[in-house]
Image (cartoon, rainbow, N blue to C red; front, side, top):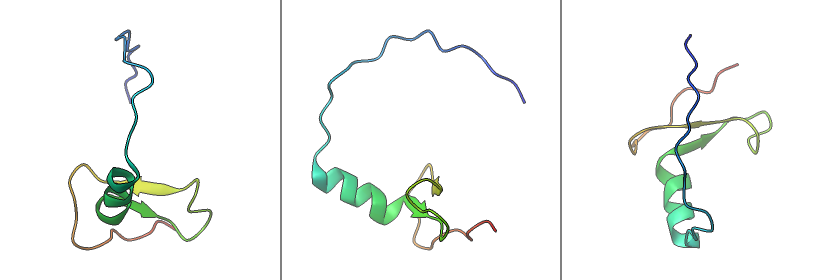
Length: 55
């Protein structure tokens, strides 16, 4: 594993619409059964099927 400090300056205060969040959750954010609010898989590309939930 390698770690590198990211010194990039990012914009603050960007607003994301509820529809955009819902679309992300429907296609790329896959919550795990145990504490899905904390434990989830975020895929790089939309998927038609959900990945297996780690145990």
